[in-house]
Length: 360
Image (tube, rainbow, N blue to C red; front, side, top):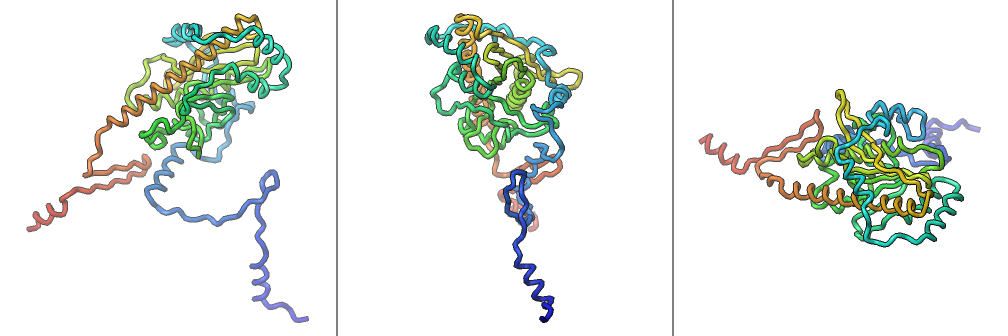
């Protein structure tokens, strides 16, 4: 038998299928050759966004890893013991305890609750069973999300250095469309929470955590709320109207079904580092009595109402600021891409005519 020619061997190799890499679950993925990105303004803008978000491959601390608490403390996220009272704490206490116009649930609801709490197998089941305690709003632009990671949040902005994205059990706020005509994704880096989601929540003011009995969720709650505080402060800096020092406008709650805790959150500088405080507002034993159960439900809904009020107020201030901005002149266009890259163009009407007149 004649030996195969070199040309034939090369042809056979070329016809062999390329083996695709498999992920950890054994699924194959299409292999694509890398393409060189064109140097356009849009690509430069995306590069700038990636740079600001700190995209990289360095290891990060997750809320489930042993190093989470240490990294959070290093980043300035304080626990309730280390946190300081805030200026409007009394207002928060009064607001949580104010009466509501709607009727309280009957005692039979409380008895059903006791039976439920004593039988749920895990935190997820507890969260699902306790959602009726939350208030539902009819305005379509105000939504809630459960267990959704903040995939659009910029990385390494201080409080989240070397940490995975926050993922609270519950967060509630306005959808990003509610901020139109403000192009919120372009103007504010940390306003949008969920990547590639046109209905993503933006600038929420409340989050919550459910946990199994005996487990502490204060660290996870503090981390999520540090993100919300950072986002609010960025938005207020954008319009040039920061909150008064020591003012808390963001609220969290944590519960294991028995104890319901509320915290107020704010940021303050200390020795050159920005610290994120989580100060206790109230604690209720939902199983203690029918009256305690009603009080906890009332406080939870009052906290939601305040967060909703803050969200709409901030949205309105941002929209007013955007509408009142100076009209951009047709004579110059300035596009900032990155602190290291500046793209500028200047088009002056009549410039050529002026040059022609000068030459004559």
